[in-house]
Length: 620
Ligand code: AGP
Image (tube, rainbow, N blue to C red; front, side, top):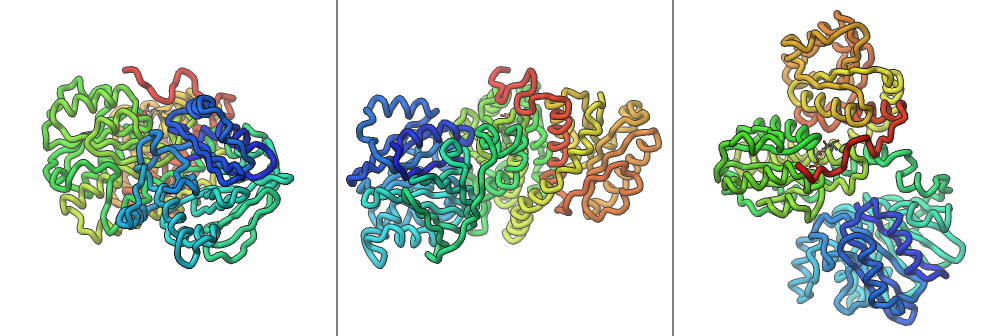
């Protein structure tokens, strides 16, 4: 997820663009950059790794004289392809330095496009997927049936791209124009007086205009100072949807919500879709920095998963998937315990280190210990260029974008999705699943974002229940199989957001002690196994619900739509779409996130910054 802004109008573009980037740093802050058209055929570009202040310092050093002009664009990056360096920062430009591009998203077919350009003798300067687009536009503009036509050249290239993208192109030959396009990632037009804006979201221009245009899928928009035209990728005119922005700036940054976490819960379908995107090509699961061969993976005879908090819970889900698909024994360890128990590791051990920040000290030290013992390390991480992936043998990046809320939501769901990819990659390398079976499992995974979206649309009933429960001092969570890690994650969310004593149990453990906690009106949230899974799990969970209801518990049951058997035992029923057994955590977790956030809000707490917590725990 990156922040993009474009401007054509009567003001100095640099001022407008830099201010907009400042407002969009929550969308990414690995690097930032600007491009300004000076109106007399010049195109000035400056970009720097790190926070926006680094770019501003560079602009001051160079003197801003070459950045005089009333058309320009900017980008603040959350790295997916290519480390967060000056070289990989956006904007990227063509060889002649006449065209610039900024991009949010993932060009899935950038590999073959990059090869095509290299075969044509084009020297690419960065490791990014983005850069291929500007060279392709330059080549289309230089020769062939679109020569000299900026719009036609851009359209021609857009029709070749696969993946998700918001792209903005500027051309020094056309200083009063910006051409932008979107597919599956956000782009909105701001309509001012003698000035036009483009932004990843309205925060980019809300201080200048509240009149905006929503664009549809595969739309192109060409803006000049006093006009905008919307086309499809074939160049046919289409209509945008005008709307008036009622939010203030702070609400705009949070997508109209009171807290970033609430926005991030709603971003989960995209976070999961982006994490999956590009990781299944030519019928194979591919990791990001695959420095482990299939033979290395075949030589693995044991897997340890090490992580903390929510990342640890995602690792518990991974255990079920990896053992079922790859037939490998998996131990899931709290990173803070891992190296102190002298685990038995060697070159045939794979340690999967899961971390959103990539900087968690406990997990980083576990990685170092594993490498000292010659184990192979695979990082599942959301932060490109952070310490844990740098010290790992292979990396699979989640693409949840920056997660501002301290309580992990979209990063957690993206970790669960990424862990499934690790399981399929191991099964693929070891042959425990045939290619067609891997393809089928991936297809089921790829269908999950739509189901998550459907589930988020039903949030109000969960919020109503949460308001009703907000005064409770204890709430228990029960789960079986992949529902057990979900019960633990639901309890953690409630603890860290609403400061309620909450505890998750494996439901089978109830009779071994915890059932003594059950008393009248005690809320117990139960994650019901899929009725299509192991029938015994489903029937045993029904027995558990009956046991606790008989002792006065208030049962809140999360169950698949159509699971009629649970209804007589559910004081409150939260229905989730049906899904494959192993993938259910991608759905059953969502109501628990919404529930915890609403309880915290009802209690008047800061959902984004819970007490005593930090987003990244860089101390042991
Ligand atoms: C989850 O809601 C918490 N914020 C916390 O448990 C977090 O998951 C844990 O600290 C691990 O962080 P990491 O993923 O950045 O390593």
